[in-house]
Length: 508
Ligand SMILES: Nc1ncnc2c1ncn2[C@@H]1O[C@H](COP(=O)(O)OP(=O)(O)OP(=O)(O)O)[C@@H](O)[C@H]1O
Image (cartoon, rainbow, N blue to C red; front, side, top):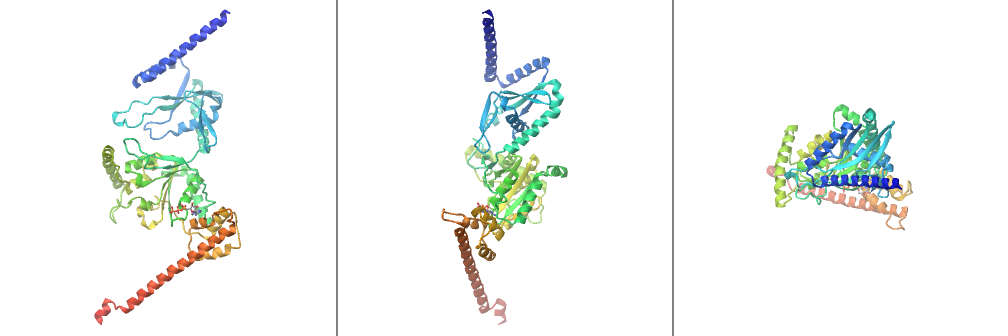
């Protein structure tokens, strides 16, 4: 009878000691200034490390400038979610990639164990309060600093530092690539930081179904683009060796409805990239552009659609004959940055947003330099309906490495659409369609629209007839336009014949 009473007392004492300790820690966290918290942490650390044979390694979510989430942290997170979350008792549940599955990971302050080549290690997800910010930065929300702490006995130091961490990094990365839910980011002008008007990325899940297989494009062209993209994505070492940033620029041009946006989706799907749809007119200045581009993830595609309409991109060019040197560009950009920073503050105070001041020099700087230095593989894609309007400096090889023309639908392209939309690869009406397509121009978007069944009654035959009718109408229209042009030309010539030229009049 005595023993249980003693045990009960013992447990009560242990329980109340732990509770008191936790209470004191909570009070310290809640009320003590940040500096005192850090001092106490340091003191505790020094005392314990004297007797303690264990080593700790911290992996922080954000480093230094806090601009970019650490890749290592994300890899550890993925590794632990997949490998050790099974043994955790407190878990965090989140919706997974396709919104149908649930991903479990360890919750904050939860501890899990892992074993690697005989070494036993512990992982804990911890957080601390962020240091107080200077008054001038008080408009940014305060954030906690999250980090994983890895602990192990000092006899496993070599195994952990030389092998285990590399193993976690590699496995975590593979899991992330596999589980990646790709996103479509836009710098929507609607979302702003409070009090400091800066556009930030907002995102939705990227689920566009387009692939190169479903694109109406000649096979040779398709294969060439796919090969180019795949070579680029496998060329990390090559770019490192030649000392160039791992990036490639694509210019897609052609009339509306020829598949420029569709190709962007197919490219992103092929490479498993995130897509950043950059709306240049919503970017206030070059400083903001720089910030947006730095925030992009490492496997990403930055898309600027209809570049010719976005801004007066030729506005900052020097006169013909004058070279646009790097120093010029930098100076130009820096001058702008300082001036614009001042203006942004003024606008912030009077509530006036003003218009975009992104310059060609700013954009070129990021493509060529600063943004490229962020590491990771990046594609930048420009689209335009009017390639001739673009400043040659913007699209020269090296900046826009590959120029792809998307044009009117060919018979080969039609056959791809026929297979996609109607599930057929041949039909007696194909010959007529081939002949008509040789005579008139029709965009893949128009072909697709005609092939799309609009009611359950629309069988392949009816859809093909719709397309033939559209082609015949287009042919008639073309003939009418050509006829009118011919007529206008003839009457102009006749007028010229009747009216003598100035010289003729003089000689007469
Ligand atoms: N080459 C193509 N292959 C398959 N489908 C296509 C192709 N081109 C156009 N389409 C179809 O037409 C629709 C419009 O095409 P898309 O938006 O890609 O054209 P675009 O060239 O980007 O046009 P715009 O210049 O007006 O933005 C797409 O949703 C797609 O269904």
